Image (cartoon, rainbow, N blue to C red; front, side, top):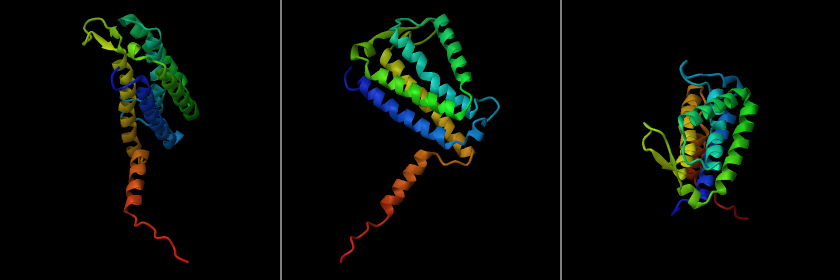
Length: 185
């Protein structure tokens, strides 16, 4: 694959997961039950969803499935729901985020350009009717970033300044400070 390799994807996924873990650490466990509205996942449910979200992609692409039918998709969604609901506490969720993220990134590192270029088909009415494995694996990272953005808004609702904002503010403050002059003897 020209320009963006599996190793690039693994490296960028590791960065995304590191930021998700920092967010999960920043939210107190007593706020893990918080829901922005009754119709959305709680903090814990969303983090558990992210934590197990890499499994389906790794299983499907590891088996090199060439076609994903409705039954296979449904079975995986049921499996994912069971895995999500098994994660109850902040330590369990953080462990799953770390373990599953490390495993997925290490697996991504082993994928060849030829494998990433393979196409996977879908039944009608899914459009497009096929996608490359690369596009599908990139969507795992995009999916996590989507949910992390939701969680960053939740942090604000809980009175927490997201770590990315804190880090940016600290860097800006550092740049605005005059450079210390060396003391002369």
